[in-house]
Length: 504
Ligand code: GLU
Image (cartoon, rainbow, N blue to C red):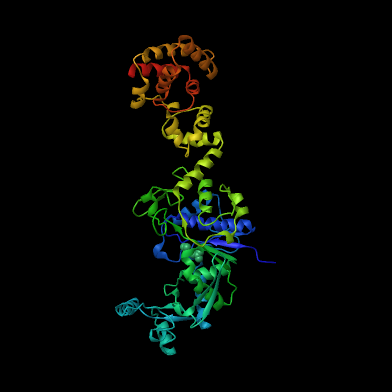
């Protein structure tokens, strides 16, 4: 029986989770669920210098908001924890030692200054300095130095790192689920640092050890990790462990121009690149988030699913459970995916329309609360049902229909010039008298009685209806005027007609 699928999302808590990271998490989630597997969250925080306060909580909240919670991870132990590398720090040294023992790694004592000098020296000659097979014998390490000297340095507590000994002159075959096979010449690899004398492993060692111990079957991650694949495969080999399958997801590119979508691009180009709003704990700088910009998580998830994948059919709208069904790693693209903020809005509009009037009214109520506007639930729900069609975001409902909650104080000037004629005040006066008498006060009666009055007196429909609308709304927009008049009530309608008459 093949092993149960286990995948992990392994972010480093160095800041807010970029939308690209959310996509990586999403694809891992989809793949896990499709194969009835487990989706793990592992926090890769071995680099204490880059640790950012609040980043871990942010990652967890983002996954929850998107509706892609992890099965195992911080706070959800399942026998493979702890899931934070800083809490596993004691675990890694033994593996580094194992590699030294087997001849796959070595101690290196070169100081930062010495390495810098080598780099400079090479640069001056137009070359790049790489710590590898080519020059390791000339550097300060346990391969070049006599055994006694190495012992002496270690006992004296001299600073060292443990480096991987990349094999020489081998053609390595690598397999990627998305990219297929690749050949790589091991001579181009450098001897990466695996362990530092501060007692902490580097990303490479901790990542491989943890994937092994956590029984990860598939590593699905961003393309920026492709250059590390050879080292990772070599590490598995050196340990004598079976390697998981690898899949490297394509880059997410800027909407226009060249290059990767960066953390800075969003607010510069007017769209969020983070799932949730983020306040930098040091500078206080705020980066906008999809949640706070009133996007629905379904829209964000649907948009992200298409950033590098497609189902091979015409279908574009996918809820999460449909994505789980449709998702195939083999349909993930190799080439970069252009970010398209307009498309995100298109998804957003679709999912907003799918919301029930009641749910939307509840969300809209929060906006009204902020404006200290009291409104009955039933009333808000009716307003929402009338305006929803034209809304992309819940807050658009305010833009589209604030007049349902507040009488207009001013009137659109251009419209006023066009529809408010010399005889309009007189007409509005009459209209207001008719409205007063409508009983019971409802759309049908309003419509019948006003229309009868217009036809009987040969006034012309537009001459009444246009100023009527302007008086109630303040502009020439909105749904049916009779609906508006009925909803806001008789008293309010009469009040607005009189106000317009006095002020226009
Ligand atoms: N900690 C790495 C990151 O921040 C994980 C890369 C991987 O998935 O192997 O992206």
